[in-house]
Image (cartoon, rainbow, N blue to C red; front, side, top):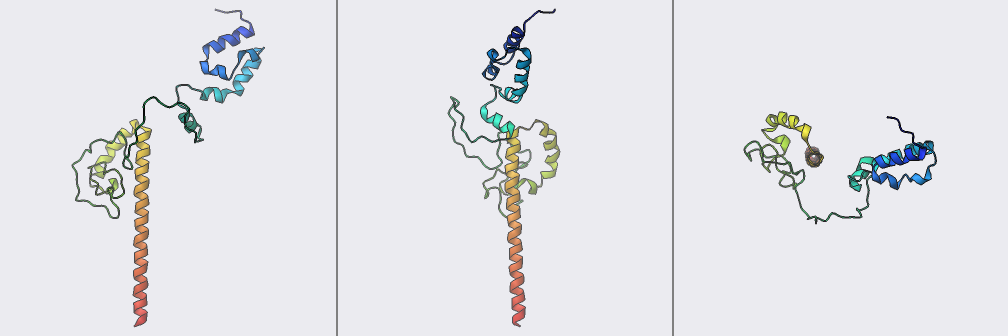
Length: 193
């Protein structure tokens, strides 16, 4: 089927098939020729593709890489309640697959002391995931399930790892400082003799 349409009719047909939010950018009265209309679409291409009414404004800013400091103009009707959660917690955190084992205690701060979630393998608050005796047994399961991981879960794990490694480096620095102090006192005691 071939239709004999004028350029203005083609522009109108395209706009009828386009998402309604495109009309805020492309006004059909402004274009006399099909070529002008095509140039306008090419010029505004990125904006037109980014204007998706199904996505909230914050997601668009996050996708483009520029974080928005503005609050959304319209809020959800559902009231949000303040919740305090442990570092590394996510909704996918479920019951640990292994029995709780408090016999292993991490050096330095434990997750309980650092206000972090307990071990994901056994549920103990006395040691970190990496220190758990069940750590290696649960790694294969974690890798196979990683395909269906939500971004919220990944962010929670990154927060947990960041806290764990920051505490680990501060503990190492404390140990080094103590060793240097003992060496200094030993050398000063030897020089006194």
